[in-house]
Length: 44
Image 1 (cartoon, rainbow, N blue to C red):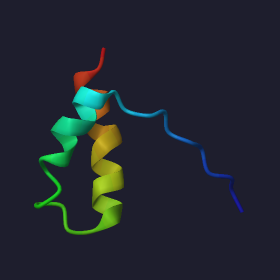
Image 2 (cartoon, rainbow, N blue to C red; image 1 turned 60 degrees about the horizontal axis):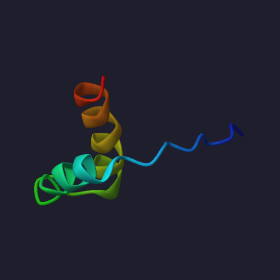
Image 3 (cartoon, rainbow, N blue to C red; image 1 turned 30 degrees about the horizontal axis):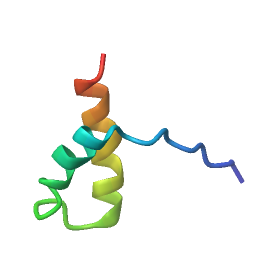
């Protein structure tokens, strides 16, 4: 079995932004996938 890689913690402001989309993302898997996606788009 593959070992899981830990994702670095998101900056507080980015985390606050991602939380706004929680009502639209219905499953925990969607929320977990959305946060790294947004950080890849917005962080340099």
